Image 1 (cartoon, one colour):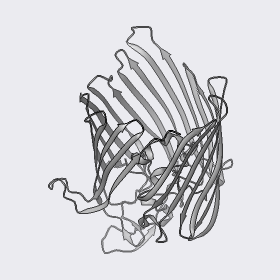
Image 2 (cartoon, one colour):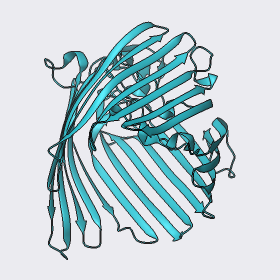
Image 3 (tube, helix red, strand yellow):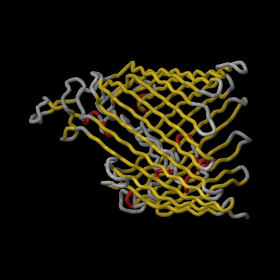
Image 4 (tube, one colour):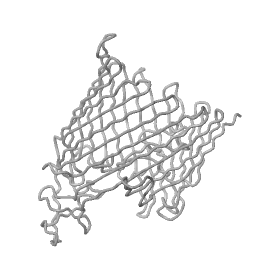
Length: 473
């Protein structure tokens, strides 16, 4: 879902070249995110294990369309782990993105120590160095986590500080200049053999975010508390229910519509189209006690069918207008396996946001379909299509109802229709030998009423091929 989002979204890696051995690149805080290599011209990857060391490295050259200087951005990514016994390890990470005379470099270390069988402690410290058109910047990221995973009870406590100038050009750190703290707790009970209720788990969470420079002496700028219950019924039906309370504190530097800060907002003095005079935008100090509820149900995993439905409703923040709103979310997913060789996965999600006065603000619909066919033991086909339809009303000042102005323009109603299609062919004649061929295309302003394949604007397309061969030394 992209509706009402202030920060970039995480999309999982799907490209076969990067998927193989992707787990070897895992780091706390997602400091390696291979989708940052958007349109690689060429690349090489090394992954393996030598004694107590686990090694993964990628070098790649990206397309000039991803450059700020007109060159081919070059990536160098390295992840090392050293085993400290069977369950603990020491890790090192280094990434570099070179773009002409500009660069973004990062280096850090982390340690994961399991103690008392059920507990682990994880610590991480990272520094980054960025040189871009605005000059040289240095930032840090630190994290501490304590976790318990037991049969009846578990918890996870964490504190992460990310400096304003921290930059991870080869990673995914959606938000900088903040300190995040969380506390998650879980209690699980078990029913008697043959009982209707086989298991029941209760989850409690508290999350707080402070500005980096205000941590310890200023109030948090946002947070939430939630309680959820998840059960497993006889036959493996899994219902769930949750209640959440959110709050958000705003100022002129808070992010609103398409990354614009509220300090850049103005409001038309009147509703008259001919009146271009503007007045300052009144930024609310706090939106508090935003309660919402959610529920869902997952079916058992039958031989030919599995399904999930979910829904949520409640108060929330309309970040585009810095105002209280009401959101409704609906989702459904089914996995069909009509034959051992065919699998069909379909998903649909819908999110609608209304203003506090009940007027409509925006709606997003996302249907997604994936078809997989295992023709033989060696030959596999996959096609994935996703359509995103987003409509939004014009921005209105929540106090006066007058149009909001960003720059010199009123932000009017908008609509987008985006289609993404990917297909993949793989051939594995023997273990260790693999050939991938694929194609992907994205179309914006796609008209689903037109004939299949018609598009008004193609935003991205490309072929890829991969050959993998295992050498025994």
